[in-house]
Image (tube, rainbow, N blue to C red; front, side, top):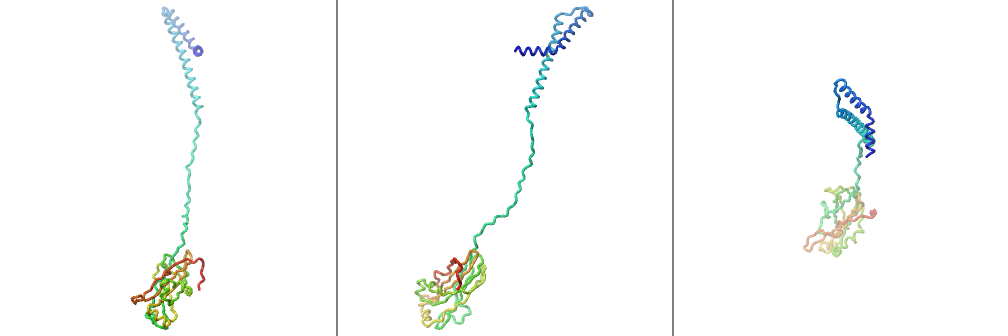
Length: 274
C-alpha cells in the first residue's frame, strides 16, 4: 500500500510544473488583490486555488498512468495474436476414367437334337404293312435341332432289323442292334428351332417268309435303332433312337417307344465314326 502511495506521489512530483504554476498564480492573485484592488485575499481562497492546481497535477499523473497502461495492453495484445496463415487449396479434381464393362464369362451354349418318329417313305412303292417274303422294308429316319443354339458336325446312321416280340418286351433291342449301326452319314449345321432337319432312308435285309409271317402275326417287330453324333459350344454329344413297329393285340400296327429313344449323352472324347 505504502509503495503504491509512493509511486503516486512520485507521479505527481513528475508534474512539478503544474504545482509551481499553481503557486505562481496564487502569488499573482495575492499581489493583484493587495496592490490593485486594495483588498487582501483570504487564506481560504488561496488554499482553494492551490488545491485546484494540486488536483490538476493528480489528474495529469492519473492520465499518464492510464495512457501508459493502455499502450502496454495494446502491445501485449499485439504480441499474443498469432499471425493467421490462409492457404487457398483448390478443390481436388477426381478424374474418373470409364472402364469397359467386365466380360462375364457365359456358360457354353448347349443345344439338343431330337429324332422324329420313323415313317414309311411317302414315295415307297412296296408299302407296308402287310409284310411279305423278300420285301426290303424302307424307313425314313429324321432328326431336328430342338435346342436353342446351332448344332454342327452332325453325323448319323441307322439299322432296320426284325426282332422277336420277347426282345421288345424285355427292352434288349438297343443293346443287340446298336453295335450294327454304322455312323457314317455326314451333314452340316442345324439351325435352332428350324422346321426342317436332316433325314435318311434306311432299309432292312430282305424279309424271309418266317419273318414276314411273324410280323403280320404279331410275333415279331420291325425295329429301328439310330444314332446321331453332333457338336455345339459345350462339347460333342450323341442322341439315340430306338422304336419298334408292331401289331397290337387288336390288330392295328403302331410304333412302340423303347427306353433309349431320344436319349442324349455327352461323348467323353471324340468317338471314331464307323
